[in-house]
Image (cartoon, rainbow, N blue to C red; front, side, top):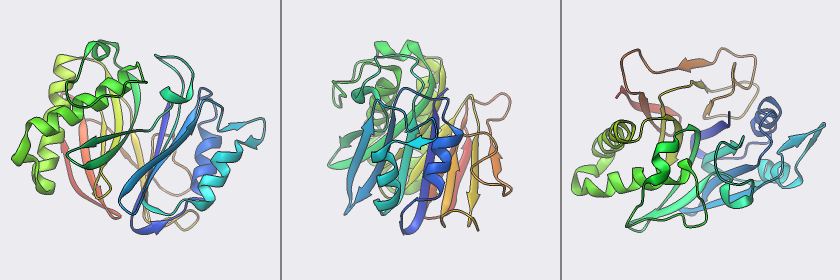
Length: 247
């Protein structure tokens, strides 16, 4: 199963400590990696179909990015292929634009039903996978809610309602990170997120990962969906969870 990592902070950070640990602890995922971040409000993603960590060595570009990226939001993904070919196009994260705003998305899980979805507004033409279609679906849902999705409460409701609707229409396992550069959404209906704020051994800010037991020996907080709910959603701004809900 793919693994996810995110940093969210009120100031720009690099991740030379936590990202290499993430790569080591998620090393069973061998089908590519990617790192997404923002620079001057523009989204960037660098990714590869190679392994992030293999036989005691980090991928050169992965190690370099961990040192040099400086951003308030950083998302990383290591891939274990469940659909689509093993190539750079299918490595996560992905970038799409909605109404002039760029979004970064990374996903793990398996939802083959949504591969039939076709968006009329936003397209990831190079990626043929459930993850690409889920990203398109989410942005279509936010766009369809229009004025109601302005401001954090409205946007949170739009993402929550769209996620619930997506699961109803296209059942599957969804675990995703979604950010527009000022808020980070984390959703899961089948795995956990481990969260730690203010680490003494890693970077500052808030760290989030799907890797079991977290990325340090500190006491990471586990978030999972409650029984009977479609999943849970949290909205993170800076190093704080501002909203969370079982959807």
